[in-house]
Length: 423
Image (cartoon, rainbow, N blue to C red; front, top):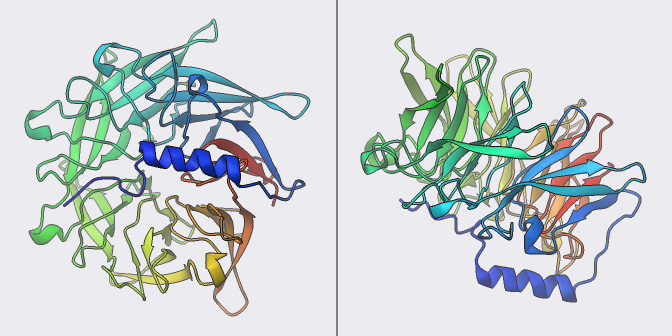
């Protein structure tokens, strides 16, 4: 099973193509609703933010870039955006990866960040960490002078045969006692990825343990190659997605339940279809979210009626099974004006509407992704509305998902910008 991020890999050819698009294609957006907060225009401040953002309590935004960060080795940054009184935003780089020999501090973060209660930032890098470069879990601690100090909590592939996993594409979450949880796309007992836990020791160090190694069943029926962040339910179960594996080899949604002896039991809630998958999605790259009734929602990159991915819902049944329902098939309109191929997860607003992004599609021939809204309608279905179509200038290819501020504005990233949308 391959764990190459073909749909997310950022190679020289794509960078050249993006530069040409940005120069040639004019921008078009509703000025009253869409605003670019910052453009990543040179390597010093980072380039290519691929993940969602987070807010601190003061309203500052934080995120990561996949590359950039000169004068380090151009392997990504952690950045902060601070709002100014005139409505502009000021970007500052908190850390440049690969600042240490052999990139032992990590390199190329795909995922976003998470705060602890003390204001420290935590995240993962998909590369770096030493000679083998299999990624790290890192912590950034703020200093009194405004600088930040990075420390590596775990270097992956530290165990024989990479039993601890390698290449964490997804981000981290905390439990109620301060332990961290995440996934790796490779490694583990069967070299098809893991779910892991990091617990802080009394001396300040951290210990990693593998909760589950994928491809433990015949033909990887339990899934393989997780790429996304996890989510807890109210009783401490973990939920996530795998990009591959499952009984149909199209990826899975899974649940991990903790046992009294400290082990975890995995259950596949849904097996996604392989090509052609007209009645189902295929290849989920993003995390799922939970509503108040315990239903799960997510996206797939491929599959669906038009092979451009879907938005799906999973509903738990009384017998312990789950029923999948496709809420929207992307590329259902002419020229895929409703978007196609979502890399990112979803978020809810207070009214129960869903919001997300697609990497491709949009209103025009040269469209480079959309921001969309899904609202439940009177017929029991869901109606999709495109809030913004990206045309390359100023933004293109929104890999990451969205977040809300306190008054309902949406914030997100494209391959070269941070933006805000007022719905």
